[in-house]
Length: 260
Image 1 (cartoon, rainbow, N blue to C red):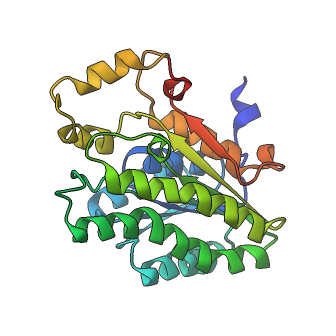
Image 2: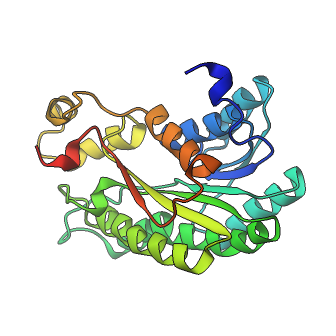
């Protein structure tokens, strides 16, 4: 496919991307901008956030980074207000912030359990609750939520993570009913994507020193995913290419969930 045929699918749109300072969120923020969107990036790490903002702007695209804890509803309010006031619209949400909350169920602290749900689930609720009215004012839009195949299968010592990602499946399907036809919402559930989060998760496995290589070999496609694999799917779901798709779950995992 020629470059001119795939560029500017999001031209004139404004997007909020949480978890946008690394991994899949960063990949999505950069590709959204390359496709013509103005991007509000959220993350906790100011240095990394400013780096992503700089890279996007140096390409001639528009972005602004807002540092903050996405589990705070007021940070979400700031993101929405920044999008509207800075760029004049709000059309796309990509809540991709997430934490692992590792620990065996018998050993996991109550604080880590609640913190994992606050970031992985509550923050999605906050952002959509505050952004949806603004999106509807401006002819609606699309929401692409970051989930995980952990919604459908277990991993060692990931109870909070898997439970919070599982809840997103039901939340997305329900929101699709409430917000249609003005806003579409879909869930991307990646498998093992080569990100810092994946590298940090290996400590939960009994064989952390070789689990990445074993995982790669078990994937039918024989490689880990890349942030760009997820970003391309996010562009599809955010754009008019998917105008009759809402409430769906898109698994992107190199074939892991085929069960082979």
